[in-house]
Image (cartoon, rainbow, N blue to C red; front, side):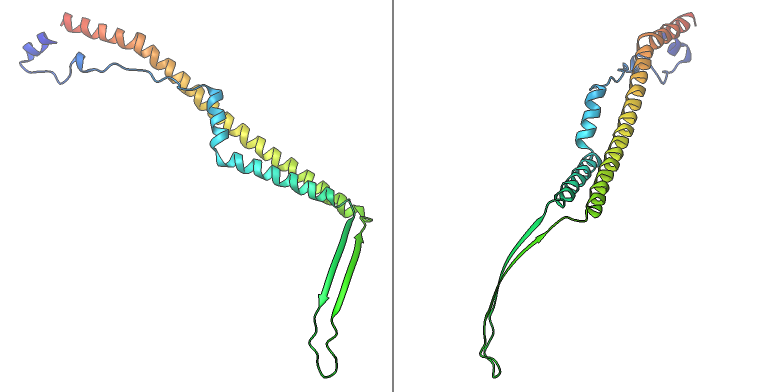
Length: 171
């Protein structure tokens, strides 16, 4: 380069020493770690899991409707005396039982809860597979680009420097 600069009577706008060493990026974490981190940190994963839990609780409540309900009540009413009445107070006790005789409505509620659980699980799995695919696709692109950069670093760039220096020395 010094010889070429002397012949041109000026300095060249570049130098071989100006070229920085190229360091190829490498993945810092494994694919499984990245996928696990996505599942832990993405709010939609937590949302789908909460939805599944909600439908499971709904199913438990629907199954409780198969059991009889017992009612017990106590009432007291205070009445002010008026001209027509001396203000007689009322006291009452109530006992009741609801028997689950008509099961079709209860069966439908349990079937609806089962269908909702299945739907929420399928939505969760679909979202999970989409996220995993996107992460693995980007990870494979990163690995491919990293290996290509290492090829440039170890083979193509040193060969280009040697060729350039040979051309300059022949000039």
